[in-house]
Image (tube, rainbow, N blue to C red):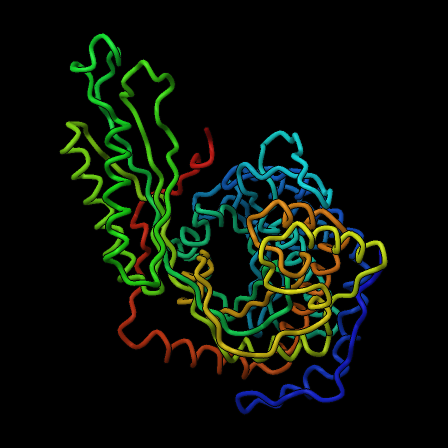
Length: 481
């Protein structure tokens, strides 16, 4: 395994009135030994999670492996928090700032893929694949938590680190249930990262979203000899979809609405008495998401009336938009700039070039993984359950190049690279950056104070958190066929 090349900048910027350069210059030595000592351990964890590829709320093996590693390193582990069997927290330390580090580990359905640079379906037990790199996310965050713990021990610095195992990010809103149940209430700062095809600490907002499964029930009958006696549930689904597609002309242009028919009948000569369609609705503002979702539901009600069927729906998940905290993002930018990006070996370069040829309209080019993106405010049209957390606790995050530059998330190329040394190199960089950020905050607790002040100003004095998914229980079987 080739190690990441560390590039030390000669000078570092001063952000938001905080002289951060004095906190990070030479700080690498404070934690690098721990990072190196645990490298094989957490690279194996990352590859184990890649092999498991367990979907949301089904991540029993993945959660167990992470818990076992953290227990071994001296953390107090509490499993099954917020009514979710695979959600957990691992704590160490006391006094001083409490810093939480988020770790995801769920895979996506239908994306099983080998580590080949060509599309090659892998016949694993779940049929899923780590198309968002959450195997790297979970392992890298746990890696950082262990390095922070060892630094707290050796330095005698008062402080607490908490690793949060957060299941079902992909459409399951695991963190929303955890936030709703107060799992993060005693944390001062939350840090996270995400696999990607570039290195960035820019403050990024996301879309808020809601999803729901709309079920239509009709009457089955022989489609040829007695069609007049049947009422097609599939007709209800198709009528709903047609109305929603016409609705697209009359929604704000930054909205996103997408669906998939999950049940549509089993035989053409039987009028389907049960059909189901699964909808996602997104917009930067959660108030608009609620409004748009209700319009989608009205289309379902109208479709049921017009097809003489019955419709019911279940809200599956809902996420707030991500609220960036520039105080923390600027600290994280400083860490990334000190560390530098990711360098490929000759074998990795050859692999990357082969993958790159398969990409459709790549947004970057090979070589970008060695760079740190300039700091600027951005918006993603995707969504994440980190959003809810960011409205409650000052939250900072980074993206790290674990994939070949230009790779799209939720693609077979992302699955493939997440199981290779390229993915592991990016994971090490993420662990280093998270650790360095935590150390900077422990050394200067005023950063946490500034971050909290910024959050309060952003949410306003009248903000009252209410989860978009209401008071429903976690949908623990939402990925079960």
